[in-house]
Image (cartoon, rainbow, N blue to C red; front, side):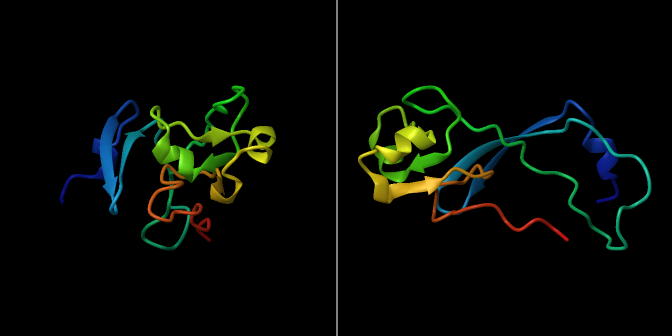
Length: 119
């Protein structure tokens, strides 16, 4: 507990992480930069990291996906269930579609979107 975070979390560090709340998400935490300077708030802890959201491609056409079919997520052998707007509109499981959002847990354990940004 006496080691400062800045000495551990250096750019280039990659940490595999398993988040489990009933369904495991395998994540990879990457340190891409360090911020030097004074604290940004008067609070002792501030959020300085976020997911870098890169939408996956649509399983039908390769365009950026906006929707996730929870039915196909579990039924398809390859586990791919991402659809663009056009293919989501004509998809057979329209009642099972979720908006694809900036969360590695979208579609797992009732996750339906990111937390509100910090103040």
